[in-house]
Amino acid sequence: MESRISEKFSELKKDGRKALIAYLTCGYPDMEATYSLVLEAEKAGVDIIELGIPYSDPLADGPIIQAASEKALEKGTNIDMIFDMAGKLREKTQLPLVIMTYYNAVFRYGAEKFLEGCKSSGIDGLIVPDLPYEEKGAISEIAKNNGTDLIPLVAPTSEDRISKLVSDASGFVYCVSSKGVTGKRSGFSEGLADFMESVRKHTELPLAIGFGISNADAARSVKDMCDGVIVGSAIIERIGQGAAKGDVAGEVRPFLKTLRDAL
Image (cartoon, rainbow, N blue to C red):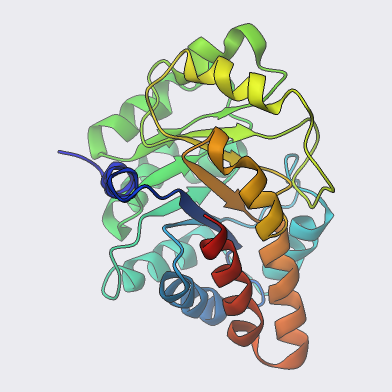
C-alpha cells in the first residue's frame, strides 16, 4: 500500500506537475494559526506540509526559522500539542503531513512513543536532519513497521555517502541546494544540477530541493531538476509580517499561490 506521500507524488507526476512542499514552524505565531495555515495552504495548492517542531538548538535552520522556533517555544509549544493538532487536521484534510525535528527531541520523547504518536495522529513522514546514518537503525525499523516514511537529507557534502543515505529511504529524498543553513539566497551554485544527477543515480524516489527557495523565480529555476521544491524561511517571514498586521492567512496565501503557479 502506497503512503499518502507516494500517492501524492504519483498523482503529480501523472499530471506533469511538481510538488510544492511548505514548511511551517508549529506554534508560530501560535498553534491555532498553524492549524489554520495548513488548511489555507491546501487551498492555495500546497501538496505536502512540513510541520517543524520548534527546537532550542536548530543546527540546520537559519535565523528566520530560529527566531520563529524561539517564539513558539516561549508560547509553550511541545510535541504532544503538535500530535494533537495533527490529529485534528486529519479530520479535515488528507494532505500529506511530514514532521521535521531534531534527533535529541525524538530521543528524549522516546523513539517508539514518538513514532506511535506519528501513526496515531496521521503523520505520514519524518525528517531528522541530524540523525546519523549509523544510528538511524532503531528509528527506521519502527518507522517502517508503522508506515511512517523516514525521509533522508542529502547535501552536496554527502558525496560518497549518498547511496547509503537513500538506500532504505521512503517517501522522497530531501536534497539540500547548497552548503549552510536554511534561509533565503540570491541564487544557487552551478553544481546543483550535477548534484541532483548524482542523487538520481542512486534512487528512484522523488527528489525535492530545499534550502534557499525564496520566491516563484527561484522555484521556477530549479523545478526541472527535481520532483518538488521545499519552501520554509520565505513562508515563515510572511507569517511574521502577517502576524504583525493581524492577518497571517492574508499575507501567506497569495505568496503560496505564486509558488504554485511557478510549478
